Image (cartoon, rainbow, N blue to C red):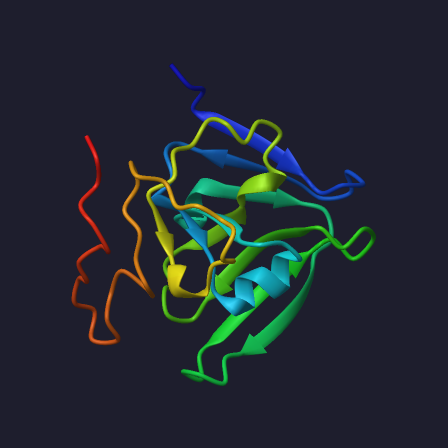
Length: 153
């Protein structure tokens, strides 16, 4: 059984956070923005309702406006060490995304799906037990998209 509370912090410890309860979802995103913003081959984002998250310490932010769809993605990070702690996306205003790697124990949540896999690095395999989508799992109109292949059970 996992704890109801989960904690995390930035690299220098100046910013800490606590989440309460289960996340709405946890995604691995392979889009160009997420790769650049994380400085890695992908980004893990754990989605919560804002009432489930408490952040302490000073945060700076950067607002990125997507040239593809014009929506804003706000990255919130520690001004001292630069660790990205959270994000807010105008497409999904009712959630806050917490960086999966910033949790003290990032093994407690389960990945819901992989997004924007058409942009993944060619050497990165995709799991057979998790839904994977070429782009987002919803269309611009909010309709569900079928995953690339059925999930192995």
